[in-house]
Length: 616
Ligand SMILES: Nc1ncnc2c1ncn2[C@@H]1O[C@H](COP(=O)(O)OP(=O)(O)OP(=O)(O)O)[C@@H](O)[C@H]1O
Ligand SMILES: [Ca+2]
Image (cartoon, rainbow, N blue to C red; front, side, top):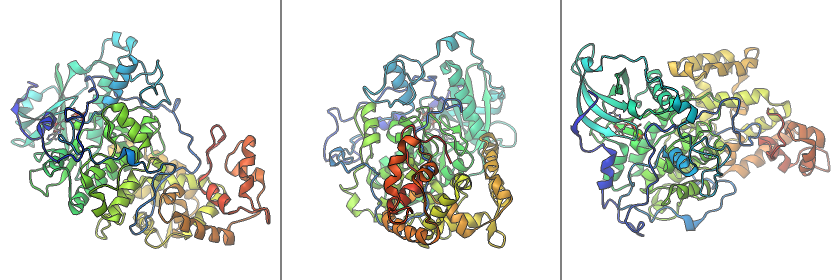
């Protein structure tokens, strides 16, 4: 028991090595034709460490830090703030002889760190680049004291795997488990063929690795009810293994299809893929689950059919997360990892970055961030701008480019959410049902805590948006089922509980409603909802930002601007007295009110190291 028989072709990742000649490289790969691969994680290596509320590692996150919203109709978006295009680090060219060199150097990030640093916990706040990690940090190798204690490898799962299932051939293999087909021998599903991911207990060498498996099963069990999510059926165990029984996907990995197509999808075909990814990721995020390992290997097609639906698998690195919680453990796959993950302070936006990488690959066939070593990939992720100049980008639509850029923004606050992306002009479809966006709840919480002046500024900003840019907000407002044009706390509660699964309970997303308590006593119309649910950061990423800001300032002049002292303004922005001088230039000498610069700065707050003493 616990062994698969034979080996199915297609979907094993080991096979990728053998896929050759997919795309001719305009400029060659490193000498042997395959980039050097970072070390894979030894199975069982601790892979995650959640930032406890006691020791979170925060970026300086200005008050009002948040997110996306509308889009202009097409056009390209500006590059990430402060980052200039760098042709030298262009991406294309490197079409791979082995286009996607073996399994992404994944979760393996942590193992590399551990290896480099000789175990121990990662040093918080450091970036895992060559020379960038100080000794004493580490990737979470086996904890000495922990290793001495006997490990409890019982999971409380059913022990009768052999009696219930007949194992068949291997259908896939990852770093932590291999997957076989199996036939159900008895019960409701008798005769059905299923997939069984087999995780060896021998490889669970630390308490954390055991916890990881527990969590993987818990998340799979708790998340149910989305078409693009692999269905969980059962979990069993015996002395040797844990068995995760799930729906069998027979169509192979998305990665294999990308390779089979020579690394590139037409825009229409790419859209069909991206919509499915966004839809399932939006669902996970609303449920309070961050996947943390989104990559083409983790999307499987149900059948070989070209138009077969895709299923998201492998929640081995996933975690529950509250809407405003931040995580700090570095996990994921190097090519797909977001910059803020490397900075050890991230949330769901990290998944969005990964979807940006996948979309980039679908559209042009090469990776946006690439190097021969893991450190090099990290450097590229942190500093390089993806290439949108070389072929085939000139023939890719402006909407598609804008879409990808909106995902690959180094500033996570400027990225779109999965739900917003579903309303982006590139994907827009009037018939599509848009799910509720947890972002609305996060922004609303901030709005309810904002000062009256800040609310007026946000209102002025929302008034500057075009009807097209308000589409997402209209759809979200509709999902709240307003009564007579108004919403209050009840509407938010009802909308959220409509999507309730065990995962949402586990991730304590529902508790977030307490933060919206002020809405129990008052109502909000669409106009105020817009002010509450827009993110100046996201708007700043729009090509039209300057125009929007200009119009917003005009509204602000009419309805919100007032005489304000340096001290008062500094307090509004949470600035310490030592930084009062910064805001001096933001007040008009002529009438003592905010000038345009002051207005835009005030909108999203300033971040000065050590100066933000309180948060809105
Ligand atoms: N439900 C399924 N149906 C068919 N094949 C599957 C299924 N689940 C997993 N597989 C195959 O098994 C492989 C490994 O599964 P999975 O990604 O869950 O394992 P892992 O060891 O956690 O992977 P990784 O190396 O990414 O951490 C997948 O890439 C896929 O090819
Ligand atoms: Ca996987």
